[in-house]
Length: 416
Image (cartoon, rainbow, N blue to C red; front, side, top):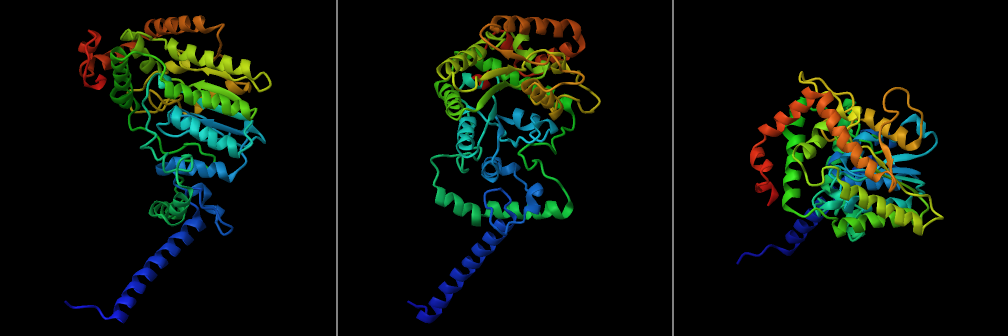
């Protein structure tokens, strides 16, 4: 059998090792110079790349880097509803350093982990936490597939392996290249330097998106709720309790927010006679947990709930059929920054000029039953005062495959 000469073999190995070393050093040099995901800062990092960093595909990692980058005093947490709507750069924040740490498809398991990471590292005085309707009632979470497990937020991850991957990894290198391209072409990415998903969101046809995606999503939820017992999920409840405990331990003001849905989404629950169309189970549980936490910690700022999910006129904005954009809404489940600004003004007590001065309510045990009636009355007002929009919603429901079977209480494949 032919054998390689020992010297030739050694040269071959050294060549390979040298090539790999050059690549690793090159990747590391570029990644630390640009710091595209906020997790590889060095004294030689060019901060001029900050506004060009493309963090969308690696939101969890990048937002953990943002936590490390600044001593934030106020932070927002939750899903894309908060990610898109709430602006940490409003002038009303003044000298308060605010950041948006919400993530696309975020659920309570991620939210509680992200808040824990942030509150242990930054001097947070205010945490605004969005909890989507129904999140407490199901075990569903994308925590293992969204990038959370690979990010610094994952408390069980291997820090050495993770930091090495950030320094010399291909994903970081690709993001560095994109940051360079963004800067060269002056193309601002989706996210601001304060974690707000502000750009590149416009749907081609908002009516089509609501008709095709938002309303069918509500229908599928109703189907599942008819075949499964609607009750609090212990895992999600434990996550909310951790949020309460963490904020109380740090004397941080907690504001739980129920983000809004457009009336044509929320109306599906009423039209299809969902067993708990006003989501009393969700609301009552949150009110109870916050009240108990406040009672146990009278020395900490009291946690409050702001509920924006109703049939307020701002949530009943007419849907254009000519392809033009809506003022308050991006689609049926995501409010625009314009509506998010109103939400923040209401939460913070800042003055509002124009619409929205009565938007949302602070939910308590005392007004819970009244809130349920407000929701029922709001649906009837939506149905009678905006009959064209209501009928458009009904037509969308009727045209969705399997709707007739659904109304008879039968189960489809989405519910199994």
